[in-house]
Structures are given as C-alpha cells and as structure tokens.
Image 1 (cartoon, helix red, strand yellow):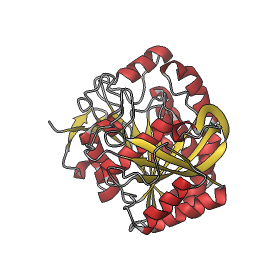
Image 2 (cartoon, one colour):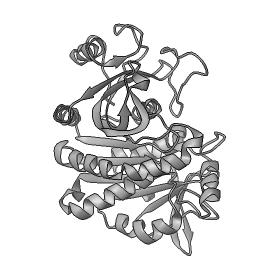
Image 3 (tube, rainbow, N blue to C red):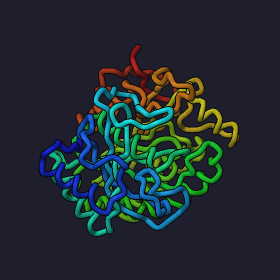
Image 4 (cartoon, rainbow, N blue to C red):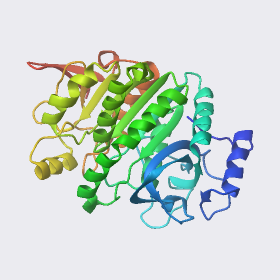
Length: 355
C-alpha cells in the first residue's frame, strides 16, 4: 500500500506539495492525520474548475485529459469493507477525506508513475475505473479504500471519466462513458509503455466496465505487443448488455492473454433498474445462474452485499475484497481460492462464495 509515514522524506515531500500549488483542504498541511495518507495517481478527462477545494478541482463536464497525484486520509479505526463518510460535516479523524489534488504535466506524471512502480517489489500497478453517479472526489475515496483494504503495495492509479455524479445523470453518463473511450485507450497505452510495470491489473465497476472493455480490446488489437503487460481484468457488477457482451466482447477478452473475472449478483437492484431501462439483461445480473462464457471466470457474489442497492460489493464486501486480494497478490485462479466453491451447470462451471 502506498502510504507516507510522518517525518519520513516522502511525507516531507507530500507536505511540500500541500503547501505549494496544489489544491488542499482548509486544514493545515501539518495537521496530524489519524493514519498515514494514501497517495494515488490519476488521469481524468473531466473539466478543470477554478475551485481551490480538492473535491471540486474537477467538475462533471468533459475536458482535456489531465494528470496528477492526489492524497486521501483514512480514519484510525477504518474497517475493511467500509467507506466512512459523513452525513453532514467532514472530520478526518472519523472519515475518508481527500486531502489534496496536484495536477502534473504529462511528462512529470509518467516520470512519477515510473518511480511509483519502481518502489514496489513486484512492480505491480492497479488501475480503477469507476461507474456511474460518481464525482472525482468520490472516485478518489473509493480508490483509497480499495488500496487500504487490499493492502496493495504496488502503484495505485484511477481514471475518472466525466460522470455527472448524480442519480438523474444516467443518460448523460452513458454518453460520456462512450466519449471517454479514446482518451482511456491512450491512457492504457501510455501506462503499458511508460510505467515499467510488469503486472497491470484493471478493476472496473458498473458502467466503468463499458469504457474499460471497449478501450482495452481496441488497444490490444492495435498494439498486440502490449498484451503481455496486462495481467488481469476484474469486472465487477458490469452494466453491459449481456447479448452485446456475448457477441462482441467475451471471445476477444477470453483470448486477450489476460486473466478475466466477472463478479455478478442476483441482489443487484441497480442492475435490475438498468435492465428495465434498456429492456435487456446486464452482465452483472444473475437470473438463475450467472453468465458463463469460455476462458472467463464468473463469480456469483449474491448475498455478500447487505446494502440497500446491493451494487457496491467491489469495496463493501470483505468476501469480494479478499477474493480480489488473492487474484492480485497470489495469482490464484478460482479453483485455487479457498473461499469459493464450483457449481457445475449444463453451460459450464461458475463459482460462488462458500457459506
């Protein structure tokens, strides 16, 4: 996990960022945060605003691709599978807080990424793609929690496309996620070429799976020499039309050379709503049995998320977080992960969590 210890050289560098030209919280940069903060790299094609508050540096309109580093603190008593956020006033002692956002030019960003990768023993990189109804600030919160809960010691990166960040923004988000595809494809190419990572893991949630699968498949078709850099794709609660996925995406993913895992649930109310809107089932749904396709492992995550919508188990479920941990840190396939049991069907095998 990329953390900065107080009074270490890295932490002093962080303080210089906070005291310099970066957007930071109103609290002093010398404030004693309850836990060493999580420092992450980001790319985004959201519009840049004039705001000085970290959470408002990037808006919800489309913009040029920007690069940078942000820092998020977690509360001292942070619990795995929880994203501690306030109902009213934010308190760094109790909540996950975005401390600062520093924008870099492209060259400086990828130099920073190389250093981030080189500091990790296994030269791993984890890229997170958020779903719909997500602001830049929320994306940073989610990524920091994932990094902390996985104990990830590689280089953490997230890409934030211009979601409107509100429930009513679903139609606009569907359009923007398509608009961002080429920007993400170039970002993936640059990461593969410039980061120096030996193992790139791609994690997407909900609508973020659309942009990830489209951009990734186009990239490796154009640059087959880059396939070897991408270790695994983790597709959680994919809000993708099942028919389109089976016809246009699944086979290509299966022969991409990457280890591909789908997580789905029969209790995902958000995807049930998406099905009603579109008139067709979604990949992340489970109706009877989950989607089973060759060369892709499908995990039935039904029952692991007790939240109202049952849609955020990628960072709210200890079971799913643990499963992702063993994929990233141990390179274990489904039949090797002790928390899973195989289910044999006429369509093939899928896996579910043991009770």
